[in-house]
Image (cartoon, rainbow, N blue to C red; front, side):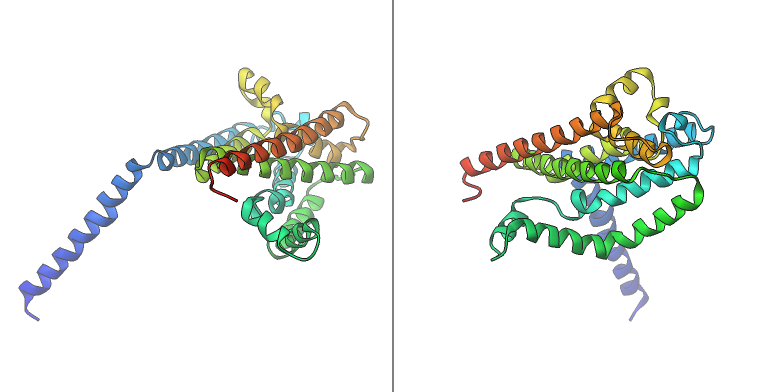
Amino acid sequence: MRSPEVLEKVYLTLRSLWYYSVWGSFYTFLAYKSTILMTVLGVLGSFLTYYFLGYSIVYQRGIVDYGVEKPLAFILSGMLLAQIANPFRYNFPLHLQSFHYAYSRPIPPVLVLVRDWVAIYTQYNAYIVLVYAAALLSSGRVAPDPLSLTAFLLLWIAMNVGLNLFENGLVCHVKKGEPISMAVRFLEYVFSGQYFPLTILPEPLKNAVWLLPYFWAYLVWRKVLFEGLGVLSFEFLVLTIASVVTLLVGLAVYRSGYNKIYREGLVL
């Protein structure tokens, strides 16, 4: 092949890459507001999470309010709790297809959901949970009350099922799944206490996060683990209310979303 032909093919290839990979991606990015929103929230969420993480954990500011003194134990406990919730929140979304599948089986729908949750948990989360739990046990004193721990896990599951339903119900209303998911995860990552203590937030934000169910979940979780918090405590009472309310609100929003798309003729 002659040199001019080779150069022409190289030129055409580079030109195609430029228009399809660079300009094409740029125009696609600008064409969808949801893509812009997701990118901005993703960058902002990562920045704020690591900013507050470095600002607080390095100097051990605020973690004592959670009943723990070691930063490593604080971080591991947050990561462990997030992994425990994943099957009920992210790995198995409670959208219409999952309910259609559950109700089309010749066995009770609850058993179908439990079976799928257990299968997903065993396949994707069990080993990670065991690793985090072992690391946590070796990092500091963990002495939970068995009753409190069991009650907390049940309330945590109920809360995450409610959040799962809430998120999927919102999707039925706005017809945009990814922006809703990104916004909910942004709030969870930055304002839950999973990675850093929320007690070091600016005063207006610190007062606002009390309204989020995540806040109480991560606070009570760590106090149960490291302080032996009992079920009759004030914090546990607030967590119970937050979990029940979250589940009920999730059911209400999901039902409202389903009724909306049913009236629009999108489902039968």
